[in-house]
Length: 491
Image 1: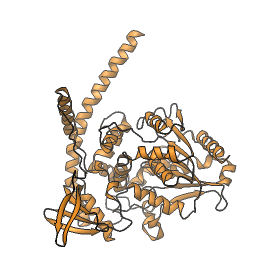
Image 2 (image 1 turned 60 degrees about the vertical axis):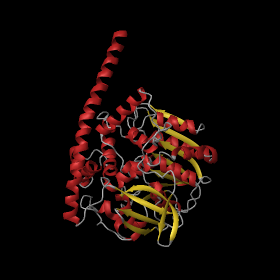
Image 3 (image 1 turned 30 degrees about the horizontal axis):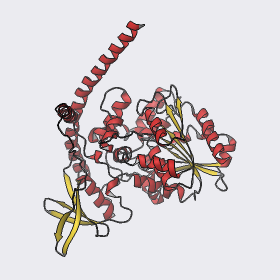
């Protein structure tokens, strides 16, 4: 037994070293490929749409905000300045994650890590940290023609400035859909009529006099089908007649709007949920069930409606406690997307998070042609396999997935602790957490970390289940779990 365990340990070390070496080679190549694709897409965008799509390879611009300018910002670069008026619906700049435009190459990242370790060995003080978005340590006094005023300075990527200008101007700068996005009726059913202003909502249950409402929020690159095809058919008749079940396609996914000028911030997502579910359905008291990225939105909603949430059920919440001294957004980016070729789910998340143009290429090949992939899947499986997971995975745009990943998963890293503390101190609702033991994307430690912030939370770890099979494959059992939670709360 001793020699066997020693052999396993040696094989584990060898495997880890191989993973590191192969990952370095692969991701170094991808760093170069992404730069080349940047140029290629600019050419294609220009010739097909008469202008190129702004990307986060652009240089940064200096943005100067006037504290007393009534929502106006001054954008300046190379001596040229513009005042841009912000309307009440425009996002705040602190909603934008710096991981959108601060993603160093793997070689650069390793070099920086090596230098840092050498400095530690030499006991060199290493207190100065660089942040791409930062407020200056002191206010700068800038004098305009009408007199002096104090303004704070910070930098922001030019892509964000351009997209802000499109939103503020009220004009649609890019066609819908873009040439690299899917043009099918399912993906673009929102582009006409009232559907532009609201999310797609699948409602089931009594229209009037429902006992309580239940809001289901799916995770990243998914859709409401994750719930409606699994849980909804397995709820008891009593539940179906007592509760109104509301499952949404989040902004940018499924059949919901996919605006090309949106930055898909936390505020954008929450506003659309309110406008599409809470207000039109006149929701007063409700339960929330959320998976993965949806857990962040669920926590934000719970904090915003502390007296209305009856229970909070989180599946695989993406919470990584940030060590002191670390940049929260960058730390979470490296945890969610570690730039490793194994496990495969980590490789996929790394491609999606680190490479803007490679991930756009994947969307071009997969999402734009999802009808073909669905047909092939049905043909190969002889129509014995339901394709709702494939539909949810493929029915989105690159713009939506890219910004949602960075602005929600990474961008909220510095806010999650305050949300969890608010749920613990201000809300009285039951909190239940489910996590698959074999989840290779978000480890069980994420749920246990949530429990440390909310001690009353009940954590249930499901053996032999991963990020998806925490629901898919055990939908009957999970439906009973939810019914017990709701019954207990109502009782």
